[in-house]
Length: 111
Length: 114
Image 1 (cartoon, each protein chain N blue to C red):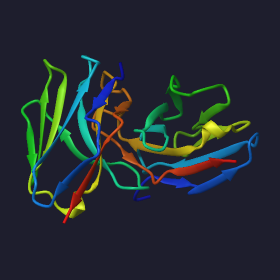
Image 2: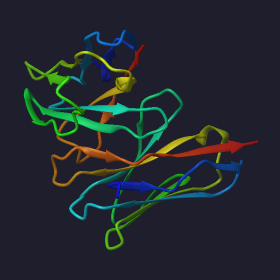
Image 3: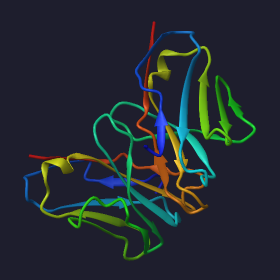
Image 4: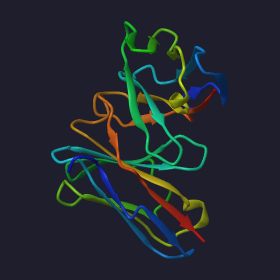
């Protein structure tokens, strides 16, 4: 089983739609969780850190369920500029560990 | 510098050739990571440095891959006797301390082995 698994994509949605990405991770010792965004032929960029209580940044909401080892990202009122690949990321355990990336889910927002 | 700088941006190598990829991390960042990203996949961990010490090299796919960071700043990833399966984007990232708070990636080096 892969350490970080994400919804298979692609997601094709109209502008203004709400879209949700789900992710599960296998290492119960993981302590930090992130969503990264990667545009075509660009490097991944940090979108949000994910906290236990859930956190919101404008149109983006991230949730973490440690008991189920599950992370989600909700995008409301999607824009054309949200089109990208969204990577679920988990640290490998401990404060010094490397980050483990999911395969990513591609989102295409259409006019 | 302002960001993580990688060079070259693109590299075409003939099969069997040795290549060296350079990473210049954000000034003061203690931790440095190398990742390999194949087309359509997420980044896969290769190796991790804290200052000049290589703390984890468990992701290096074979003994043809070697990384160093001799003065705790610039790092070089070397691939000997390149094979076609080495074709990928090689990403370098740096952070103040490990991966706990996430890290910043460079633009990557796209390696094509022909």
